[in-house]
Amino acid sequence: MVIKSALMCGLLIAATEFISAQQTTTPRPAPLDIPLPAAIVGPRIRFQTPVYDFGKIKSGEPAKYTFIFTNVGDAMLILTNVHPQCGCTTAGEWSHQVEPGKTGTISVQFNSANFSGQVTKTVMVTNNDKSNSIVTLQLKGTVWKPIDVQPTFAVLTIPPDTQSNVSTSVHIVNNMDESLVLSAPESNHKAFTAELKTNITGKDFQLVISTAPPFDQTNFQGQITVRTSSTNMPVISVTAWANVQQAILVQPSQLILAAGPLSAKQTVSVTIQNNGANSLELSEPSIDIKGVEVLLAEISPGRSFKASLSFPQGFELAQGTKAELAVKSNRPRQPFIKIPITQMSKPATVSAVAPLIPISSSVAPQTPPTRP
Image (tube, rainbow, N blue to C red; front, side):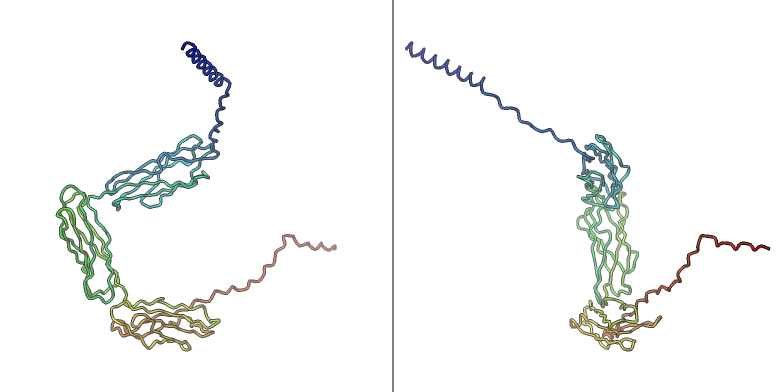
């Protein structure tokens, strides 16, 4: 047992010495060569906050912010332009030149009047940083209105020949805690009438704007006003615009010929489109000029037509002469469709100018005096 223990101790000591020798003789790996970042050459622009969230503001309040940037390059940074992409956003004072390692500022203001809901406004910054010559900055947030009116400009498109009322609606939402009371709407134009409907008492309303035939004008405009119980917005004003579509649309509305006399035969055409509810009948196309051929074709029965006019070679419309194409229709309000015809003026001729004779700067020799 004693011999066995001694043998085990000897083997343990030998193993320990071998491991120790290996540790002292095995070379350690050399540290890796990690290159340091190269210095930035030229001007470099870096913004602390390129996007600014102004949160929630009341409509009409300005949102102001000063963007801060640093020149992290090794040359002078030059800003050549700061350009907001919307007229509601303006740029104030801004740093034009910034030395390496220094900071600059750009002041921006957003006018929130006439805005509501989520908005994002962009400002473009032009500079001499070749890697980032145009930087995009943003102002974003939510514009809050005590009373939200959508839309504030109500458009009524009136089909031709309509015999019924045409209406559109405006949504009014109360965003305040207190209840809102609205008065009966008033119109400053007799062609418009307005009715107020309540969706949720004190909170949500519908303003219905209508117009009724007959329509004597192609376009007309009016103002609808509603008085409120709110001191923040005592009057709601909505502009109403009515656009009466033409029953017969002529394209082009005027025919223009090349300058005369025409060097070759010229053919021009015009399309006549019926947008009305009733079928259109056209006949007897005529032109008050001799020698001009007129052809009328029905492309789509009762809806679309094409008139072609052929002017002969050498044609020239006498100066001051008025010409027109006339087509008879079955519409009582428009028995004739007339399209004026004009011709381009001749190009002005340049009269020949006699060449200028150069005047010599030398003095003519004088005749010597004769001797007596």
